Image (cartoon, rainbow, N blue to C red; front, top):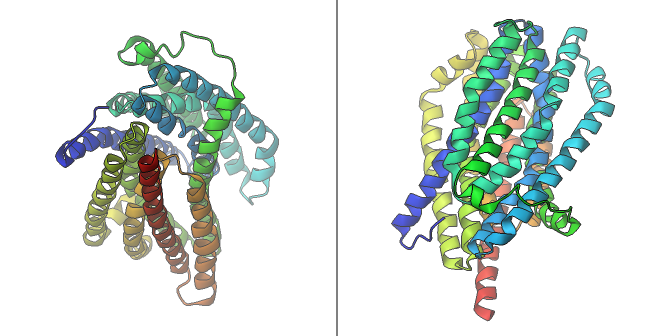
Length: 453
C-alpha cells in the first residue's frame, strides 16, 4: 500500500481497498443465502434444518474467525514499519492458531451437538437434517479457517481485489455443488439440506486451494515465501495473535449471538411475527455488509499508517471511513423507507407477513445509523491494535443494555416484539457513543506518544 498525501489520494486509495472487500463480504453472505433458499425448495424440514444449523454455526464461526482477524493489523504494522522479513513467520503462526481453533471446534461439536439439538424441542426430521448439515460442514472447518488467515495476509498488503476474485470464483462452485447434492443432479445423491453442508465443505477446500496457489505463484505474495520455511510453533507469537484476536472475536460473538438470542425469544410470538422478524433481520444483515466492509478497510489503512508512525494520516483515514459509512447509511435508510413493500416482497407473498415485515423494516433504519458509526470505529481501533475496551463495550452495549431493555419493553409494554428491536437499537447507539469517545482518546494518546519519542 502506497502513502497517500492529499485527501483526494486517500479517498481514492481507501475506495480501491474498500470495494473489493464489499464484494467479497456480499459473496460470502450469498453462500449462506444459497444454502437456505435452495434447501427450502426440497422440503420445509430441509429449510428448517439448514436454518437451525446455520443459526448454531454462524455465531461460533464469526466469533472464532474473528480471533484470526488480528493477523491483518499485525501484518499491516509490519509492512508499514518496513519489517517485511517478519511477515512470513507471523502468518505461519496464524495458520497454526487456525489449526488449533479448527480442532477445538471439531471436538466441541463432537461432544455437544447431540445434546444441543435434542434439547431444542425440534421435530426428529429437522434434528436429523440439522445434524447432518453441521457434520458435513465440519469437514470444511480447517480449510475455511486457513483461508481466513491467508485472506488477512493478502488484505493487509492492500490487495483486496485478490480476495474478491477468489470469492467470486467460489460462488459458481458453491451454486453448482448445491445443485448437485441438494437435488441429486449430475449423478450425485439427493441429500436435501445435508447436501448443502457437503457443498459448502467442498467449496471451502476449493477456496483454500485457490488461495494457496495464488500465494505460491503470484507476485507480490510469492516474494514473502510463506510456505518455503518451516517455522516452529512460537507461543510468544501466539500470545500476540490471541491478545489482539480474542477480544475481537468476543466482540463479534457478542454482536452475532444477541441477534440469535432475540430470534429465540421471538419464539413466544406467532408464526407471522417470527417470519416477519427474520425477513427484516436478514435484510438488515445484508445492509450491514456496507459498514462491516468499511470497518475491515479501515483496519488495513490505519494499521499501515500507525506502523509507519503517520498519526495524522491514520486519523484522517478514520474520519474518512466514518463519514463514508454515514453517507451510505443515509442512502440505505432512504432505500428501506421508500421501498419497504418491494424489500418485503423479496421474502414473502403472504399478506400478513408482508405488512408486518414493512413495520419491522422501519426499525432497521435506525440500525443503519448506529452501525455506520460503531462498525467503522471498531475497524479503526483494530488498526491501532486497541481491542480490549472495544470488547468490554460490546458486552455492555449488547448484553447489559440492549437485551435487558428489549426484554422489558417487549414484556411490560404494548410494543411486544418491536420492544426487542428498540432494545437492540439502544444497545447499538450506546456502543456507538462509547466507541466514538474511545477513538478520540486513542488518537490523542498516540499523538502524544509520537511527540515524546
